[in-house]
Length: 425
Ligand code: DGY
Image (cartoon, rainbow, N blue to C red; front, side, top):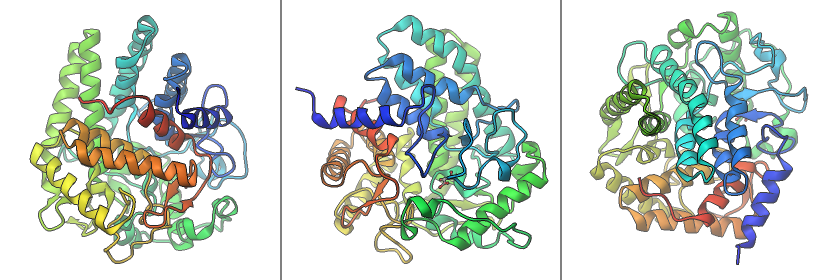
C-alpha cells in the first residue's frame, strides 16, 4: 500500500503548482525560485514526468543571455514579497532577480533522465536543456572564478541559499549600508520574525542588490566588484556534482565535447575543494575572497561537499562528524553545530535542519558507502514530517516546525525518501 505521506506530499505539490512552475509556499514565496524548482521536479517525476520537465524548462526559459540562471523569476505581480522587481530592476521582459542560486539543475536533469519511463521525451528534453545547463556552468567559471582557481564565489548570501548562515556574518558586516533606500520587509508578515534573518542582515542584502544595480547587472564586472565574495564549499560541491552528472548525460547523448569539458571542470574543482578542508573541524570551511582567509564557522555548508565525489576518507570523516552532531542535536543534520557560539535552532540557516540538505547529504553518503549515517538522516527527516508536518525547516533539538508551512520542496524530498532507496552513483 502506498504510504499516506506520499499522498499528503503530492497534495502540497499540486496546491503550490501554477501550471508551468511551482511556488515554494503560498504567501512567503509567491514566485518561482531556482533550486526549489529543480528539486521539486524530482518529486513531480514520480507522478507526471512531463510536469517535471516543464518545471525545469520554465526556469531555463528565463536564463540570461550571458548564461546566468536567476534565483527568482517574477512570473506574476505580487506585493506580498520583498524585494520585488521594482528593487531588482534587471530590465528583463519577464522580471527576474539578478543573482543566481546553487546549481542543482545538472544533477536534477540527470536523475530525471535516468528514471524516465518515456525515453523519447526525456531525450528530447535533455537535448534542449543540456547546452543551457552547460552555459550556466561556464558562466560560473567565467564570472565567479576570474583567477581560474577551479572554485567559484558567491557575491550575495542569497546565492548560497543559506541566506543568514553564521558563515556570512563577518563578510556581511563589511558591506557598507550607507545609501540603502528605505524598505518594508514582507517576510515577517508571513513567518515568525524570530525564525527569519535580522533587520541588520536585510539592510546588507539590499545594499548589495543596490550596488549590483548601480553596475547595471554586468556580470563580467560583478564577480570582482562585489564587497561580498565568498567561496562556499557546499555551493561548489553542488556545482561539481552537476558538472559530473552533465558529463554523464552528454556521454549518453554522444555530446563528447560537453562531456569532456564538464568532467574536467568537476575534477579540477574537486581537487581545489580540498584546500578548504579543516582538520580541526573535520569538515570543509568557507573561504572569504575579500579577506583572503578561511571562515572559522562549522556550518552544514562544510558537510554538503559529500554530495560530490570527494575522496572516500573525506566522506568517512563527514559521516563521523554528522554522527557526533547527532549527539548534540536530537535530529540531524543541523545547519550549524549546536555547540558553536551564535547557533540558533530556530533562525533559518543558523541551526535549523532542512530536508533538501538532508537529501543531498544522504545521497552523497549513500554513494560513498556510508549507509548507516545516510539511513539515520532519512529516518530523522521522516520522523519530523510525522511529528511536525511539511515545514520549511525544523528546530533540530525540539523538532518544532519553523518558517513557512506546506512547503513544496520539503514535500518533494519526502516523495523521494519514500519512493525509492537512495541512489548509489
Ligand atoms: C528570501 O527572500 O528569504 C529568499 O531566501 C531570498 O531568495
